[in-house]
Image (cartoon, rainbow, N blue to C red):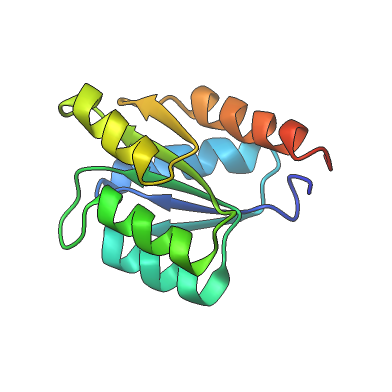
Length: 128
């Protein structure tokens, strides 16, 4: 696994958040970065594309991040899920981790934090 083959899905209902994260990841050399604006889109994308990493906002329209997380883990169990939230963080954090999230970032999520998390994943999986 390296940064060029890693498939990343950014799922947040804020276009601004997605664009900011996407451009930061591209600057770091990541090339396969995709976007979804709600949990439904994220799940549909995961069914078709099977991304390696999914950054999921918890509070979103149509389907929240926790529901999307559960469905994504059924589609591809080893998908690395990073949850992001600012609302009622403690209870959401526990729910997300119980549902299978790998890690959790506090909003506003900095591009540096996302990049660090992905780089850590590459090291952990030992192929980068």
